Amino acid sequence: MEHLSTDFGNLGFSSSRGGGGNGSNTGEWPRQQPVPPPQSRNTPPPPQSQYYQRTSSRGSSSSNNMGSSVNRSNGSQDWQQLESDLNAATAKEFVPGHGWSSHQHSSASSVGSNSQGGRSYSDIFGQDHSRDQQQQQQQRQGQDEPAPERTFSTTIPSGPSPPSFRSLHSLGLSDDTWRYYRGLSMEMNRQMDPSDPRHKAIPFPYCNGFCLDPPNPHNARSSFGYPCNTFQVVNREDGKLYCLRRFDNVKSVNPKIAATVMEQWAGLEHPGIATLHQCFVAQRAVFFVHRYIPGVQSMMQLTNPPSFDETVIWSAICQMVAVIRFVHGAGLALRTLDLRHTLVQMDSLRLRVYLNCLGVVDALEFESRKSFQQLQAEDMRNFGRWVLSMVTGTNITAVTDAQTLQNCERYCMQNYSRELRHFILTLIRSQNPPSIMDVSRTLSARLLDDLDGTQLALQRTERALAGEYESGRALRLLLKMGFVNERPENGVNRRWSQSGDCYVLTLFRDYVFHQADGAGNPVMDLGHVVTALNKVDTSDEEKIVLSSRDGKSMMVVSYADVARSLESAYHELVSGSVPPPSVQQQHGQGQLY
Image 1 (cartoon, one colour):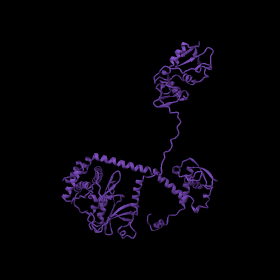
Image 2: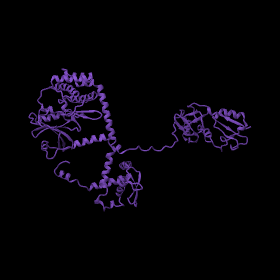
Image 3: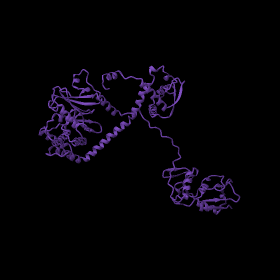
Image 4: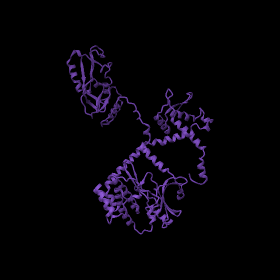
Protein backbone atom coordinates (compact mmCIF):
# COMPACT_ATOMS: atom_id res chain seq x y z
CA MET A 1 0.00 0.00 0.00
CA GLU A 2 1.28 3.35 -1.03
CA HIS A 3 1.80 6.04 1.53
CA LEU A 4 0.11 9.41 0.93
CA SER A 5 0.85 12.51 2.97
CA THR A 6 -1.05 15.74 2.65
CA ASP A 7 0.10 19.10 3.96
CA PHE A 8 -2.90 21.40 3.88
CA GLY A 9 -1.21 23.74 6.32
CA ASN A 10 1.10 24.85 3.54
CA LEU A 11 -1.78 25.10 1.02
CA GLY A 12 -0.41 22.08 -0.87
CA PHE A 13 0.30 18.42 -0.59
CA SER A 14 3.13 16.04 -1.30
CA SER A 15 3.16 12.35 -2.17
CA SER A 16 5.94 9.81 -2.01
CA ARG A 17 6.13 6.21 -3.14
CA GLY A 18 8.21 3.69 -1.31
CA GLY A 19 10.86 3.44 -3.99
CA GLY A 20 10.28 6.90 -5.48
CA GLY A 21 8.86 7.18 -8.96
CA ASN A 22 8.54 9.55 -11.85
CA GLY A 23 4.93 8.80 -12.62
CA SER A 24 5.61 6.77 -15.76
CA ASN A 25 4.26 3.39 -14.60
CA THR A 26 1.40 1.89 -16.52
CA GLY A 27 -2.05 2.31 -15.03
CA GLU A 28 -1.15 5.40 -13.02
CA TRP A 29 -3.09 8.66 -13.43
CA PRO A 30 -1.42 12.06 -13.17
CA ARG A 31 -1.91 13.69 -9.82
CA GLN A 32 -4.66 16.37 -9.70
CA GLN A 33 -4.12 19.89 -8.36
CA PRO A 34 -4.70 20.02 -4.56
CA VAL A 35 -7.50 22.10 -3.17
CA PRO A 36 -6.35 24.88 -0.81
CA PRO A 37 -8.62 26.13 1.95
CA PRO A 38 -10.72 29.17 1.07
CA GLN A 39 -9.23 32.55 1.91
CA SER A 40 -10.63 36.02 1.87
CA ARG A 41 -9.64 38.54 -0.78
CA ASN A 42 -7.56 40.49 1.70
CA THR A 43 -5.54 37.44 2.80
CA PRO A 44 -1.97 37.80 1.52
CA PRO A 45 -0.86 35.12 -0.94
CA PRO A 46 1.40 32.26 0.19
CA PRO A 47 5.17 32.61 0.10
CA GLN A 48 6.55 32.82 -3.40
CA SER A 49 8.67 29.68 -3.15
CA GLN A 50 5.69 27.50 -2.19
CA TYR A 51 3.51 29.14 -4.84
CA TYR A 52 6.07 28.41 -7.54
CA GLN A 53 6.55 24.89 -6.23
CA ARG A 54 2.86 24.23 -6.77
CA THR A 55 2.32 26.07 -10.03
CA SER A 56 5.50 25.56 -12.01
CA SER A 57 5.24 21.75 -11.92
CA ARG A 58 1.57 21.50 -12.85
CA GLY A 59 1.18 18.97 -15.62
CA SER A 60 4.90 18.05 -15.58
CA SER A 61 5.63 14.32 -15.54
CA SER A 62 9.27 14.78 -14.63
CA SER A 63 8.74 16.31 -11.18
CA ASN A 64 9.36 13.97 -8.29
CA ASN A 65 6.95 15.84 -6.05
CA MET A 66 4.04 17.22 -8.06
CA GLY A 67 4.48 14.92 -11.01
CA SER A 68 4.33 11.65 -9.07
CA SER A 69 1.37 9.43 -9.82
CA VAL A 70 -0.97 7.43 -7.61
CA ASN A 71 -1.92 3.86 -8.32
CA ARG A 72 -5.68 4.06 -8.12
CA SER A 73 -6.17 0.30 -8.43
CA ASN A 74 -5.21 -0.25 -4.80
CA GLY A 75 -8.41 1.50 -3.69
CA SER A 76 -7.03 2.73 -0.40
CA GLN A 77 -9.09 4.80 1.99
CA ASP A 78 -6.50 7.56 1.74
CA TRP A 79 -7.16 7.84 -1.98
CA GLN A 80 -10.91 7.96 -1.45
CA GLN A 81 -10.49 10.70 1.13
CA LEU A 82 -8.23 12.65 -1.21
CA GLU A 83 -10.62 12.20 -4.13
CA SER A 84 -13.46 13.51 -1.96
CA ASP A 85 -11.41 16.54 -1.04
CA LEU A 86 -10.59 17.15 -4.69
CA ASN A 87 -14.20 17.08 -5.83
CA ALA A 88 -14.37 19.16 -9.01
CA ALA A 89 -17.64 20.75 -7.99
CA THR A 90 -15.99 22.46 -5.02
CA ALA A 91 -12.47 23.04 -6.35
CA LYS A 92 -10.78 26.33 -5.59
CA GLU A 93 -8.48 28.13 -7.97
CA PHE A 94 -6.05 30.93 -7.24
CA VAL A 95 -6.43 33.84 -9.66
CA PRO A 96 -3.80 36.58 -9.36
CA GLY A 97 -5.45 39.72 -8.08
CA HIS A 98 -8.63 37.86 -7.06
CA GLY A 99 -7.38 35.45 -4.38
CA TRP A 100 -8.81 31.94 -4.05
CA SER A 101 -12.18 31.53 -5.70
CA SER A 102 -14.33 28.55 -6.50
CA HIS A 103 -15.71 27.87 -9.95
CA GLN A 104 -17.86 25.16 -11.41
CA HIS A 105 -16.16 22.66 -13.70
CA SER A 106 -18.61 21.82 -16.40
CA SER A 107 -16.16 20.55 -18.99
CA ALA A 108 -12.50 20.02 -19.69
CA SER A 109 -12.16 23.74 -20.30
CA SER A 110 -12.11 24.28 -16.52
CA VAL A 111 -8.43 23.37 -16.47
CA GLY A 112 -7.43 25.87 -19.11
CA SER A 113 -9.59 28.94 -18.63
CA ASN A 114 -12.02 30.68 -16.37
CA SER A 115 -14.64 33.22 -17.40
CA GLN A 116 -15.46 35.89 -14.87
CA GLY A 117 -17.50 38.96 -15.60
CA GLY A 118 -17.30 38.47 -19.35
CA ARG A 119 -13.43 38.46 -19.35
CA SER A 120 -11.55 35.36 -20.49
CA TYR A 121 -8.48 34.28 -18.51
CA SER A 122 -5.93 31.89 -19.89
CA ASP A 123 -4.35 29.18 -17.74
CA ILE A 124 -2.60 31.10 -14.99
CA PHE A 125 -0.05 28.32 -14.49
CA GLY A 126 1.51 28.98 -17.85
CA GLN A 127 1.94 32.72 -17.42
CA ASP A 128 4.79 34.85 -16.17
CA HIS A 129 4.33 35.72 -12.49
CA SER A 130 7.03 38.35 -12.17
CA ARG A 131 4.44 40.93 -11.17
CA ASP A 132 3.19 38.69 -8.35
CA GLN A 133 6.77 38.19 -7.20
CA GLN A 134 7.38 41.94 -7.06
CA GLN A 135 4.10 42.45 -5.21
CA GLN A 136 4.91 39.84 -2.58
CA GLN A 137 8.39 41.26 -2.14
CA GLN A 138 6.85 44.66 -1.39
CA GLN A 139 4.51 43.06 1.14
CA ARG A 140 7.45 41.45 2.92
CA GLN A 141 9.05 44.90 3.16
CA GLY A 142 6.20 46.18 5.30
CA GLN A 143 3.37 47.05 2.94
CA ASP A 144 0.32 45.63 4.66
CA GLU A 145 -2.36 47.06 2.38
CA PRO A 146 -3.84 44.63 -0.14
CA ALA A 147 -2.50 44.72 -3.65
CA PRO A 148 -4.58 46.63 -6.20
CA GLU A 149 -6.81 44.56 -8.38
CA ARG A 150 -5.36 43.92 -11.83
CA THR A 151 -7.11 43.00 -15.01
CA PHE A 152 -5.68 40.71 -17.65
CA SER A 153 -6.25 41.31 -21.31
CA THR A 154 -7.52 38.54 -23.51
CA THR A 155 -5.02 36.25 -25.19
CA ILE A 156 -6.96 36.27 -28.45
CA PRO A 157 -4.75 38.03 -31.02
CA SER A 158 -6.31 41.16 -32.47
CA GLY A 159 -4.86 43.33 -35.22
CA PRO A 160 -5.65 46.95 -36.02
CA SER A 161 -9.19 47.60 -37.11
CA PRO A 162 -9.58 48.14 -40.86
CA PRO A 163 -10.05 51.72 -42.02
CA SER A 164 -13.57 52.89 -42.62
CA PHE A 165 -14.71 52.89 -46.21
CA ARG A 166 -15.18 56.34 -47.70
CA SER A 167 -16.71 57.39 -50.97
CA LEU A 168 -15.88 60.42 -53.07
CA HIS A 169 -18.90 62.29 -51.70
CA SER A 170 -17.75 61.83 -48.10
CA LEU A 171 -14.63 63.93 -48.69
CA GLY A 172 -16.49 67.19 -49.27
CA LEU A 173 -19.75 68.97 -48.70
CA SER A 174 -23.10 67.36 -49.27
CA ASP A 175 -24.81 68.16 -52.55
CA ASP A 176 -27.35 70.50 -50.95
CA THR A 177 -24.72 72.39 -48.98
CA TRP A 178 -22.45 72.57 -52.01
CA ARG A 179 -25.24 74.03 -54.16
CA TYR A 180 -26.09 76.53 -51.44
CA TYR A 181 -22.56 77.91 -51.18
CA ARG A 182 -22.12 77.78 -54.92
CA GLY A 183 -25.20 79.99 -55.23
CA LEU A 184 -23.73 82.41 -52.69
CA SER A 185 -20.46 82.52 -54.62
CA MET A 186 -22.24 83.23 -57.89
CA GLU A 187 -24.26 85.97 -56.21
CA MET A 188 -21.20 87.66 -54.74
CA ASN A 189 -19.43 87.68 -58.13
CA ARG A 190 -22.22 89.45 -60.02
CA GLN A 191 -21.32 92.63 -61.89
CA MET A 192 -23.07 95.05 -64.19
CA ASP A 193 -22.06 95.30 -67.82
CA PRO A 194 -18.95 97.51 -68.18
CA SER A 195 -20.90 99.87 -70.45
CA ASP A 196 -23.72 100.33 -67.93
CA PRO A 197 -24.05 104.08 -67.14
CA ARG A 198 -24.90 103.32 -63.51
CA HIS A 199 -21.21 102.69 -62.84
CA LYS A 200 -20.84 106.47 -62.68
CA ALA A 201 -23.08 106.58 -59.61
CA ILE A 202 -20.55 104.56 -57.59
CA PRO A 203 -17.87 106.73 -55.93
CA PHE A 204 -14.23 105.83 -55.43
CA PRO A 205 -12.87 103.59 -53.81
CA TYR A 206 -15.77 101.26 -54.61
CA CYS A 207 -15.96 99.27 -57.83
CA ASN A 208 -17.47 96.16 -59.47
CA GLY A 209 -21.00 97.36 -58.79
CA PHE A 210 -24.20 95.42 -59.25
CA CYS A 211 -27.61 97.05 -58.85
CA LEU A 212 -29.76 95.46 -56.12
CA ASP A 213 -32.88 97.57 -56.66
CA PRO A 214 -36.01 95.90 -58.01
CA PRO A 215 -37.35 97.24 -61.32
CA ASN A 216 -38.72 100.76 -60.80
CA PRO A 217 -40.24 101.90 -64.11
CA HIS A 218 -42.22 104.75 -62.53
CA ASN A 219 -39.22 106.24 -60.70
CA ALA A 220 -40.99 105.96 -57.36
CA ARG A 221 -39.41 107.26 -54.19
CA SER A 222 -37.91 104.94 -51.63
CA SER A 223 -39.40 104.20 -48.23
CA PHE A 224 -37.27 107.03 -46.81
CA GLY A 225 -38.86 109.68 -49.07
CA TYR A 226 -35.84 110.26 -51.35
CA PRO A 227 -34.70 108.71 -54.64
CA CYS A 228 -32.39 105.84 -53.75
CA ASN A 229 -30.09 103.46 -55.62
CA THR A 230 -28.65 100.35 -53.96
CA PHE A 231 -25.53 98.57 -55.22
CA GLN A 232 -23.43 95.58 -54.31
CA VAL A 233 -19.84 96.88 -54.47
CA VAL A 234 -16.27 95.87 -53.68
CA ASN A 235 -13.98 98.11 -51.67
CA ARG A 236 -10.60 98.49 -53.36
CA GLU A 237 -8.88 99.02 -50.02
CA ASP A 238 -9.85 95.76 -48.30
CA GLY A 239 -11.40 93.70 -51.13
CA LYS A 240 -14.63 93.04 -49.19
CA LEU A 241 -18.22 93.21 -50.39
CA TYR A 242 -20.51 95.98 -49.14
CA CYS A 243 -24.01 97.27 -49.75
CA LEU A 244 -23.91 100.91 -50.91
CA ARG A 245 -26.97 103.20 -50.89
CA ARG A 246 -27.03 106.50 -52.69
CA PHE A 247 -29.62 109.17 -51.79
CA ASP A 248 -29.88 112.09 -54.20
CA ASN A 249 -31.36 115.53 -53.63
CA VAL A 250 -30.81 115.41 -49.87
CA LYS A 251 -30.07 118.94 -48.71
CA SER A 252 -30.46 118.39 -44.99
CA VAL A 253 -27.34 116.23 -44.64
CA ASN A 254 -23.87 117.73 -44.71
CA PRO A 255 -20.46 116.15 -44.02
CA LYS A 256 -20.64 117.15 -40.34
CA ILE A 257 -23.97 115.35 -39.85
CA ALA A 258 -22.65 112.31 -41.71
CA ALA A 259 -19.59 112.21 -39.44
CA THR A 260 -21.79 112.51 -36.33
CA VAL A 261 -24.02 109.62 -37.41
CA MET A 262 -21.00 107.52 -38.28
CA GLU A 263 -19.52 108.18 -34.84
CA GLN A 264 -22.72 107.00 -33.16
CA TRP A 265 -22.94 103.70 -35.06
CA ALA A 266 -19.25 102.97 -35.56
CA GLY A 267 -18.08 99.70 -34.04
CA LEU A 268 -21.57 98.32 -33.31
CA GLU A 269 -21.48 94.75 -34.58
CA HIS A 270 -24.17 92.16 -33.98
CA PRO A 271 -25.04 88.97 -35.88
CA GLY A 272 -28.58 90.25 -36.43
CA ILE A 273 -27.81 93.63 -38.02
CA ALA A 274 -26.15 94.91 -41.18
CA THR A 275 -23.36 96.94 -39.61
CA LEU A 276 -22.89 100.52 -40.81
CA HIS A 277 -19.41 100.72 -42.30
CA GLN A 278 -19.30 104.26 -43.67
CA CYS A 279 -21.46 107.38 -44.12
CA PHE A 280 -20.22 110.25 -46.29
CA VAL A 281 -21.30 112.96 -48.71
CA ALA A 282 -19.98 112.98 -52.29
CA GLN A 283 -21.20 113.78 -55.82
CA ARG A 284 -24.03 115.90 -54.33
CA ALA A 285 -25.47 112.80 -52.68
CA VAL A 286 -25.40 111.00 -49.34
CA PHE A 287 -23.92 107.48 -49.26
CA PHE A 288 -24.45 104.77 -46.64
CA VAL A 289 -22.25 101.68 -46.76
CA HIS A 290 -23.45 98.62 -44.79
CA ARG A 291 -22.18 95.09 -44.42
CA TYR A 292 -23.26 92.93 -47.33
CA ILE A 293 -25.12 89.75 -46.34
CA PRO A 294 -25.34 87.27 -49.25
CA GLY A 295 -28.29 84.99 -49.81
CA VAL A 296 -30.93 87.20 -48.19
CA GLN A 297 -33.97 89.11 -49.39
CA SER A 298 -36.38 91.49 -47.76
CA MET A 299 -39.74 90.35 -46.48
CA MET A 300 -41.47 92.56 -49.03
CA GLN A 301 -39.59 90.89 -51.90
CA LEU A 302 -40.98 87.44 -51.15
CA THR A 303 -43.15 86.61 -54.16
CA ASN A 304 -45.47 84.36 -52.14
CA PRO A 305 -45.20 85.29 -48.46
CA PRO A 306 -45.29 81.98 -46.58
CA SER A 307 -47.66 81.27 -43.75
CA PHE A 308 -45.08 80.85 -41.02
CA ASP A 309 -45.51 78.25 -38.33
CA GLU A 310 -45.83 79.71 -34.86
CA THR A 311 -42.54 78.11 -33.80
CA VAL A 312 -40.77 79.96 -36.62
CA ILE A 313 -42.46 83.23 -35.63
CA TRP A 314 -41.32 82.87 -32.02
CA SER A 315 -37.78 82.20 -33.25
CA ALA A 316 -37.85 85.40 -35.33
CA ILE A 317 -39.22 87.29 -32.31
CA CYS A 318 -36.35 86.05 -30.14
CA GLN A 319 -33.79 87.09 -32.75
CA MET A 320 -35.29 90.57 -33.06
CA VAL A 321 -35.45 90.92 -29.27
CA ALA A 322 -31.70 90.30 -29.17
CA VAL A 323 -31.15 93.01 -31.82
CA ILE A 324 -33.34 95.58 -30.03
CA ARG A 325 -31.72 94.83 -26.68
CA PHE A 326 -28.26 95.34 -28.20
CA VAL A 327 -29.12 98.64 -29.91
CA HIS A 328 -31.07 100.07 -26.97
CA GLY A 329 -28.27 99.07 -24.64
CA ALA A 330 -25.92 101.24 -26.73
CA GLY A 331 -28.20 104.26 -26.21
CA LEU A 332 -29.56 104.24 -29.79
CA ALA A 333 -32.85 103.48 -31.51
CA LEU A 334 -33.60 101.35 -34.57
CA ARG A 335 -36.19 103.57 -36.34
CA THR A 336 -36.32 101.19 -39.35
CA LEU A 337 -38.23 98.22 -37.96
CA ASP A 338 -40.66 97.07 -40.67
CA LEU A 339 -40.84 94.38 -43.35
CA ARG A 340 -39.20 96.57 -46.00
CA HIS A 341 -35.96 96.73 -44.04
CA THR A 342 -35.99 93.20 -42.65
CA LEU A 343 -33.76 90.69 -44.41
CA VAL A 344 -34.54 86.99 -44.13
CA GLN A 345 -32.53 83.88 -44.91
CA MET A 346 -34.47 80.63 -44.92
CA ASP A 347 -33.07 77.10 -44.95
CA SER A 348 -34.23 73.66 -43.90
CA LEU A 349 -33.47 74.22 -40.21
CA ARG A 350 -34.42 77.76 -39.29
CA LEU A 351 -35.26 81.30 -40.36
CA ARG A 352 -32.50 83.88 -39.95
CA VAL A 353 -33.56 87.51 -39.51
CA TYR A 354 -31.39 90.62 -40.07
CA LEU A 355 -32.24 94.30 -39.65
CA ASN A 356 -31.02 96.62 -42.39
CA CYS A 357 -30.57 100.38 -43.04
CA LEU A 358 -29.49 101.30 -39.51
CA GLY A 359 -28.38 104.92 -39.21
CA VAL A 360 -30.16 106.08 -42.37
CA VAL A 361 -33.09 107.74 -40.58
CA ASP A 362 -30.70 109.25 -38.02
CA ALA A 363 -28.98 111.16 -40.83
CA LEU A 364 -32.00 112.02 -42.97
CA GLU A 365 -34.01 113.23 -39.93
CA PHE A 366 -31.11 114.58 -37.92
CA GLU A 367 -33.08 117.68 -36.90
CA SER A 368 -35.74 115.60 -35.17
CA ARG A 369 -36.30 116.81 -31.60
CA LYS A 370 -37.47 113.48 -30.15
CA SER A 371 -35.57 112.07 -27.20
CA PHE A 372 -34.04 108.61 -27.22
CA GLN A 373 -36.63 107.45 -24.67
CA GLN A 374 -39.43 108.40 -27.06
CA LEU A 375 -37.64 106.79 -30.00
CA GLN A 376 -37.06 103.55 -28.08
CA ALA A 377 -40.72 103.43 -27.00
CA GLU A 378 -41.69 103.84 -30.67
CA ASP A 379 -39.33 100.96 -31.49
CA MET A 380 -41.32 98.71 -29.16
CA ARG A 381 -44.62 99.66 -30.84
CA ASN A 382 -43.06 99.06 -34.24
CA PHE A 383 -41.87 95.72 -32.91
CA GLY A 384 -45.48 94.68 -32.24
CA ARG A 385 -46.51 95.86 -35.72
CA TRP A 386 -43.57 93.95 -37.19
CA VAL A 387 -44.69 90.70 -35.53
CA LEU A 388 -48.26 91.23 -36.73
CA SER A 389 -46.92 91.88 -40.24
CA MET A 390 -45.05 88.57 -40.18
CA VAL A 391 -48.19 86.75 -39.04
CA THR A 392 -50.48 88.24 -41.70
CA GLY A 393 -48.06 88.96 -44.57
CA THR A 394 -49.18 92.61 -44.66
CA ASN A 395 -46.77 95.45 -43.97
CA ILE A 396 -48.27 97.32 -41.00
CA THR A 397 -46.85 100.70 -40.07
CA ALA A 398 -47.86 103.60 -37.82
CA VAL A 399 -50.02 105.06 -40.63
CA THR A 400 -51.97 101.86 -41.36
CA ASP A 401 -55.73 102.44 -41.15
CA ALA A 402 -57.74 101.03 -38.24
CA GLN A 403 -59.83 98.67 -40.39
CA THR A 404 -56.78 96.90 -41.82
CA LEU A 405 -55.27 96.66 -38.36
CA GLN A 406 -58.49 95.15 -36.98
CA ASN A 407 -58.66 92.57 -39.78
CA CYS A 408 -55.07 91.53 -39.13
CA GLU A 409 -55.74 91.13 -35.41
CA ARG A 410 -58.79 88.98 -36.16
CA TYR A 411 -56.69 86.77 -38.47
CA CYS A 412 -54.08 86.35 -35.73
CA MET A 413 -56.74 85.40 -33.18
CA GLN A 414 -58.20 82.72 -35.49
CA ASN A 415 -54.94 81.06 -36.56
CA TYR A 416 -52.45 81.49 -33.73
CA SER A 417 -52.28 81.01 -29.99
CA ARG A 418 -53.62 83.36 -27.38
CA GLU A 419 -50.12 83.92 -26.04
CA LEU A 420 -48.90 85.31 -29.36
CA ARG A 421 -51.96 87.52 -29.81
CA HIS A 422 -51.61 88.91 -26.27
CA PHE A 423 -47.91 89.60 -26.92
CA ILE A 424 -48.70 91.58 -30.09
CA LEU A 425 -51.56 93.62 -28.63
CA THR A 426 -49.57 94.49 -25.51
CA LEU A 427 -46.87 96.09 -27.66
CA ILE A 428 -49.20 97.86 -30.10
CA ARG A 429 -51.99 99.23 -27.91
CA SER A 430 -50.13 100.16 -24.71
CA GLN A 431 -49.68 103.87 -24.06
CA ASN A 432 -46.43 103.00 -22.29
CA PRO A 433 -45.16 99.83 -23.98
CA PRO A 434 -42.91 97.52 -21.96
CA SER A 435 -39.18 97.98 -22.25
CA ILE A 436 -37.00 95.52 -24.06
CA MET A 437 -35.69 94.19 -20.74
CA ASP A 438 -39.23 93.36 -19.61
CA VAL A 439 -39.88 91.58 -22.90
CA SER A 440 -36.62 89.63 -22.55
CA ARG A 441 -37.61 88.34 -19.11
CA THR A 442 -41.02 87.31 -20.43
CA LEU A 443 -39.48 85.34 -23.32
CA SER A 444 -36.81 83.53 -21.31
CA ALA A 445 -38.19 80.06 -22.11
CA ARG A 446 -38.61 80.94 -25.80
CA LEU A 447 -35.05 82.24 -25.91
CA LEU A 448 -33.77 78.87 -24.70
CA ASP A 449 -35.73 77.12 -27.44
CA ASP A 450 -34.16 79.42 -30.02
CA LEU A 451 -30.73 78.69 -28.54
CA ASP A 452 -31.34 74.98 -29.17
CA GLY A 453 -32.09 75.74 -32.81
CA THR A 454 -28.90 77.76 -33.06
CA GLN A 455 -26.89 74.85 -31.65
CA LEU A 456 -28.40 72.47 -34.22
CA ALA A 457 -27.47 74.83 -37.04
CA LEU A 458 -23.96 75.13 -35.61
CA GLN A 459 -23.58 71.34 -35.47
CA ARG A 460 -24.58 71.07 -39.11
CA THR A 461 -22.00 73.70 -40.02
CA GLU A 462 -19.33 71.86 -38.03
CA ARG A 463 -20.12 68.62 -39.86
CA ALA A 464 -19.76 70.42 -43.17
CA LEU A 465 -16.47 71.91 -42.01
CA ALA A 466 -15.21 68.48 -40.95
CA GLY A 467 -15.82 67.23 -44.49
CA GLU A 468 -13.74 70.07 -45.91
CA TYR A 469 -10.79 70.30 -43.55
CA GLU A 470 -8.61 68.14 -45.83
CA SER A 471 -9.43 70.07 -48.99
CA GLY A 472 -7.28 73.10 -48.23
CA ARG A 473 -4.17 71.06 -47.43
CA ALA A 474 -4.59 68.83 -50.47
CA LEU A 475 -5.15 71.81 -52.76
CA ARG A 476 -2.02 73.52 -51.47
CA LEU A 477 0.09 70.45 -52.20
CA LEU A 478 -1.45 69.95 -55.64
CA LEU A 479 -0.84 73.58 -56.59
CA LYS A 480 2.81 73.35 -55.58
CA MET A 481 3.28 70.09 -57.46
CA GLY A 482 1.56 71.57 -60.52
CA PHE A 483 3.93 74.55 -60.48
CA VAL A 484 7.05 72.43 -60.00
CA ASN A 485 6.60 69.25 -62.02
CA GLU A 486 8.06 69.12 -65.55
CA ARG A 487 8.49 72.81 -66.22
CA PRO A 488 9.72 73.16 -69.83
CA GLU A 489 12.34 75.79 -68.97
CA ASN A 490 13.96 73.32 -66.55
CA GLY A 491 14.21 70.45 -69.01
CA VAL A 492 18.02 70.62 -69.25
CA ASN A 493 18.60 71.47 -65.61
CA ARG A 494 20.67 68.89 -63.76
CA ARG A 495 18.29 69.05 -60.83
CA TRP A 496 15.58 67.66 -63.08
CA SER A 497 17.67 64.83 -64.50
CA GLN A 498 17.06 61.25 -63.47
CA SER A 499 19.77 61.52 -60.86
CA GLY A 500 18.70 64.88 -59.48
CA ASP A 501 17.07 65.49 -56.12
CA CYS A 502 13.80 66.84 -57.55
CA TYR A 503 13.32 63.88 -59.87
CA VAL A 504 11.64 62.25 -56.90
CA LEU A 505 8.67 64.63 -57.35
CA THR A 506 7.99 63.31 -60.85
CA LEU A 507 8.16 59.73 -59.63
CA PHE A 508 5.96 60.56 -56.66
CA ARG A 509 3.37 62.10 -59.00
CA ASP A 510 3.23 58.81 -60.92
CA TYR A 511 3.11 56.87 -57.64
CA VAL A 512 0.09 58.83 -56.44
CA PHE A 513 -1.98 59.40 -59.58
CA HIS A 514 -0.80 56.94 -62.24
CA GLN A 515 -1.29 53.56 -60.60
CA ALA A 516 -2.06 50.58 -62.83
CA ASP A 517 -2.61 46.86 -62.36
CA GLY A 518 -0.63 44.03 -63.91
CA ALA A 519 -2.57 44.28 -67.16
CA GLY A 520 -1.93 48.00 -67.49
CA ASN A 521 -5.45 49.06 -66.54
CA PRO A 522 -5.66 52.32 -64.55
CA VAL A 523 -6.44 51.97 -60.84
CA MET A 524 -8.62 54.81 -59.52
CA ASP A 525 -7.86 54.52 -55.80
CA LEU A 526 -9.05 57.71 -54.12
CA GLY A 527 -8.05 56.46 -50.67
CA HIS A 528 -4.46 55.97 -51.83
CA VAL A 529 -4.32 59.52 -53.19
CA VAL A 530 -5.71 61.12 -50.02
CA THR A 531 -3.50 59.02 -47.74
CA ALA A 532 -0.34 59.82 -49.70
CA LEU A 533 -1.03 63.56 -49.78
CA ASN A 534 -1.81 63.61 -46.05
CA LYS A 535 1.46 61.84 -45.25
CA VAL A 536 3.42 64.30 -47.36
CA ASP A 537 1.70 67.22 -45.64
CA THR A 538 2.64 65.81 -42.21
CA SER A 539 6.17 64.77 -43.33
CA ASP A 540 5.66 61.15 -42.34
CA GLU A 541 8.84 59.06 -42.04
CA GLU A 542 7.25 56.03 -43.69
CA LYS A 543 9.34 54.65 -46.56
CA ILE A 544 7.96 54.06 -50.05
CA VAL A 545 9.44 52.68 -53.26
CA LEU A 546 9.26 54.92 -56.32
CA SER A 547 9.84 53.53 -59.79
CA SER A 548 10.27 55.15 -63.17
CA ARG A 549 7.85 54.39 -65.96
CA ASP A 550 10.31 52.12 -67.76
CA GLY A 551 11.15 50.30 -64.53
CA LYS A 552 14.88 50.95 -64.84
CA SER A 553 15.11 53.43 -61.96
CA MET A 554 13.95 52.77 -58.42
CA MET A 555 14.49 54.67 -55.21
CA VAL A 556 13.42 54.29 -51.60
CA VAL A 557 12.38 57.56 -49.99
CA SER A 558 10.15 58.67 -47.14
CA TYR A 559 7.20 61.00 -47.33
CA ALA A 560 9.30 63.49 -45.38
CA ASP A 561 11.92 63.40 -48.15
CA VAL A 562 9.21 64.12 -50.71
CA ALA A 563 7.94 67.05 -48.62
CA ARG A 564 11.43 68.53 -48.30
CA SER A 565 12.06 68.16 -52.03
CA LEU A 566 8.74 69.83 -52.84
CA GLU A 567 9.34 72.78 -50.51
CA SER A 568 12.90 73.25 -51.77
CA ALA A 569 11.88 73.19 -55.44
CA TYR A 570 8.88 75.45 -54.88
CA HIS A 571 10.85 78.08 -52.95
CA GLU A 572 13.55 78.03 -55.61
CA LEU A 573 10.86 78.57 -58.24
CA VAL A 574 9.29 81.44 -56.28
CA SER A 575 12.61 83.19 -55.73
CA GLY A 576 13.12 83.50 -59.49
CA SER A 577 9.53 84.39 -60.39
CA VAL A 578 8.04 87.75 -61.40
CA PRO A 579 4.52 89.08 -60.64
CA PRO A 580 1.81 88.95 -63.31
CA PRO A 581 1.60 91.90 -65.75
CA SER A 582 -1.65 93.14 -64.19
CA VAL A 583 -0.03 93.35 -60.77
CA GLN A 584 2.99 95.14 -62.19
CA GLN A 585 0.68 97.68 -63.82
CA GLN A 586 -1.23 98.31 -60.56
CA HIS A 587 2.00 98.76 -58.61
CA GLY A 588 3.18 101.20 -61.26
CA GLN A 589 0.00 103.24 -60.79
CA GLY A 590 0.34 103.20 -57.00
CA GLN A 591 -2.72 100.99 -56.46
CA LEU A 592 -2.96 98.17 -53.97
CA TYR A 593 -3.61 94.76 -55.42
